[in-house]
Length: 258
Ligand SMILES: [Zn+2]
Image 1 (spheres, rainbow, N blue to C red):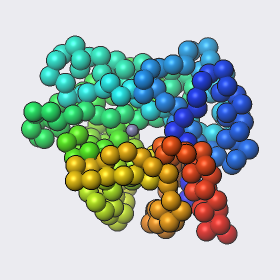
Image 2: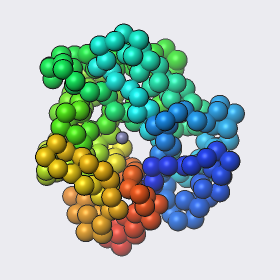
Image 3: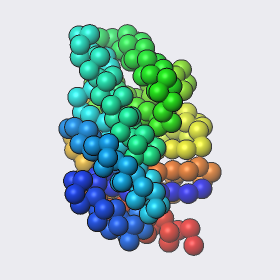
Image 4: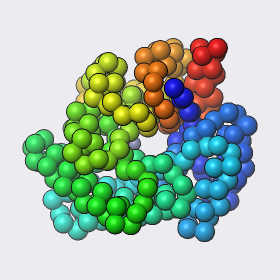
């Protein structure tokens, strides 16, 4: 088993080289580039950043736009959502990124069953477009932290089963949504060898996630103790102190595996 740690951010293109070198010096081997507000990396830059990351042994991933709703009733919004994911895939492919993580959608006034059907259809279409373009990058719907947002563990696992898409297991979100994390159940429901994960400290209430917070040492210890041993896992930290948190996670992992 290998676990790679890294933060949810690369920052501006002009400092990307220095940032990646800094992550590398700190022993981090993953980095999630945030396209949450825009796909801000141009094709020419993507090639250079991708080559450098590869040289430094850092696996890249992308966090897709916040403005995605594959359960949108408005056809235009739905098409725009699919396009945002595919545009991120196109740049991600040049970056050599492993996956584009995205928030699948909102239930709004639509039943959970119908929401699932709508999102399933959209994910199938994205998978087909990806295949047509011969892109290797994976698309990874994320388990979501708010009770009224699509993305329970079961919903994401079903999408994986029915479409062949990949997945992002966000352990903080699962805790916020379900108030506890059933690691055995997660292991059973995601038998795949490669896991892309998010993990951070989180503040939550009745309705689920409120916001991320700095990850505490005991939270890292608990996660690392419970992760399966026979997988390749990437853990992206999204806390306000994501670089320091990732370094702490890595050092706990390394001290435990000696
Ligand atoms: Zn996310």
